[in-house]
Every structure is written in C-alpha cells, then in structure tokens.
Image 1 (spheres, rainbow, N blue to C red):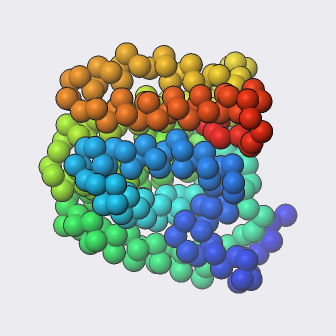
Image 2: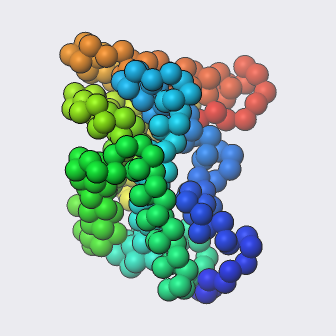
Length: 272
C-alpha cells in the first residue's frame, strides 16, 4: 500500500525539476550514466554541429533545452506513476508514495515557471514551432497515460522516446528556421536512440522475445547495422552530425564490451 506524501527533506527533492526523474528513473550511477552517454552527449554533439556552436555554448543551449523538456516530461512521469498505473496491464510502481493535491499543484506550477524561463533564455518563447513541439509532447504523454490498448501505447511510447531525445536539441535549430536540421535530429534519434528502446519496451510488455538483446555486443552490432541509413542521412543533408553521433555510440559500446569482457577492472559503461 503506497504511503501518503509527506514533506520530509528526502522527498522535497521531488519538487525540483529533474528531482523526480532522478529519484524514480535516473538512478545513480548506472541509469544516470547510461542516459548521459546514450542521449545527452549525442544531443550536445547535435547542438554543436547543427547549430554551429562551440562546446560551451552548445552545452548551455542543450541544458536549457533539457530543462524545458524535463519540466513537461516529469509531469508525465508523475501521471504515469499515478493515473497511468490504472490502465497498464503490466504496472510498475516506481515510488511508494501517493502525492497530495497540494504537492502536485506545486510540482506542476514550479515546472511551468521553469519551462517559461528556459524558453525565454533560449529565445523561443514566442516561437509557434517550439510551443507546437511542447504541445506534441503533452498530447503524447496524455495519450500514453490514458490509453488502455497496449498495442496502441507502443506508438505513443515511440513518439515519446523520439521527443525525449530530440526536444532539448531543437531550440537552437528553431531559432535558425532550420527544418532540414530538425528532421536530421529526428532521424538520428530514431536510429540510434528510440529504436533500441522500443525493442526494450516491447520486451517489457511481453510482446517480443529477443534474448540476444541481453548479449554484451548486441547494442554494438545494432549501432553498426544502422550505419547505411545514418550515412545516407549525412550525405543527403551534408551534415556530419549523424555520423559523429554514431561514432560516439560505437565508441561507448566498444568500451562496454571490453570492460564486460574483463579487459580492465571497472563497472559497466552502458547498456541501453
């Protein structure tokens, strides 16, 4: 039986943007490091190369974009951990607490303020495209948390995964009115980030049996397998960014395989 929410210091972190995600999803160190290596670093690479920014400016832009994204996504996380469990055939309770109405009001209000501040700092507060992107994320979150048909939730999950990867990168490209760059981000995210997670989601819902997915070299092979299409995207757009992200992913997975094989003594690097 979940306990009612009480404002203990250990739970006040939930109110802070990214605090709830960190506690319920991005557990330290493994999950946090996996996300950093497979989503955040490639995102910064895309901002730098597609946005023509130096490393420092690209990191700041990505962090502001991520702040805008996570403020919306965490509301979806909270909804998933409360409302969404009622419609999930394979429910997974991530926190053993029932938030109060007052807590949820503060939770949403603070994130709304940070979202607006990040949009202003990024220069996209008046951009229709930016708010349309946020609207698409909200719509996908609502659908994913209210749909009962698991076979349809697969589609909302794929959209959420793609927006999770792409949205922090998009503001700098929205400012440039760079539609080809935006589509390049979506294509890169689909091939290198969302597709592996989609297979994991299918497996978790009991709709896919792929035991080879747990092999050490599986994700390395998967990254190499998508090389033809990633290379095509780079050639068609004249942008090295997709190939740079692929090269980073291959490096991460090679490191993981070597460590897992005992080439040197250390913890796991990444297994998406």
